[in-house]
Length: 303
Image (cartoon, rainbow, N blue to C red; front, side):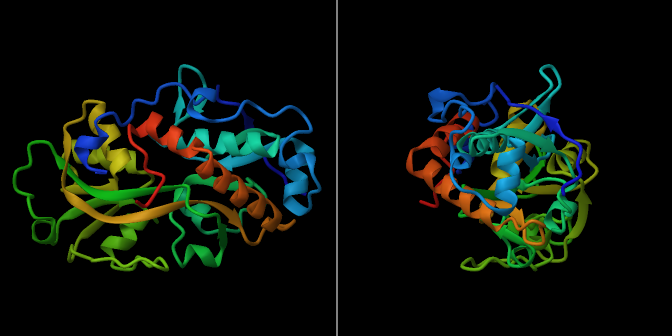
């Protein structure tokens, strides 16, 4: 039995020059971007034979998703509407629609999500998570639904950082704790099929609860730089904050939907169903449409 509290809702460059429209998603996605209308009761994956966690989700009629309420343009809580919005929010909502259920939200800390052993508090995470080798030990991951570069951000009036490979050695760099950016600076990032050039040496790593908090401290001069996704960085810049992206991306990473391997009942059936849904969303252009809405370009392919 899963015991949880739920907030249930149904939310109605890669260069800098290409990302000028980033952060302008506004309203949540509708059928104009290729996403489907909400499934009627009994439609979607849940209309077929289901087992384990997938069967529970179908029976309860809600897919509970972990999200970050302060990670725009991927996810944020709109205080005016009381609804979550962003690229990841639209992806999660569309997955629920294709299952044939509604979507509910939980907002645990990032390190709790990546550690696994969720104890049934939520069913899946759609939060721009990279399937690193250590995370794959405790989580199932779908095929990637997005591919986003990591970039270095400094204060807008900083003219001293021009060469990332030398000018940031020993600098205080803010990142979200437990994220791949922290692993990159610690030279521990490991993803099967990917190689990394760890160009920054001896960084003084400052960990934060989320990327936005790190960027706020950068704007206030409390750190020398921040590493985050190009989409998050450009969205923060577009809001008028005094920071800028410098240099080329330091690495590129795939982003996937995750499921707890220790789940009881097993999450494998739900993982397999959602993996198929992600493939469908690639094939029918839904993911591309959502990315173009929120980021201004299609980030859902490695090409």
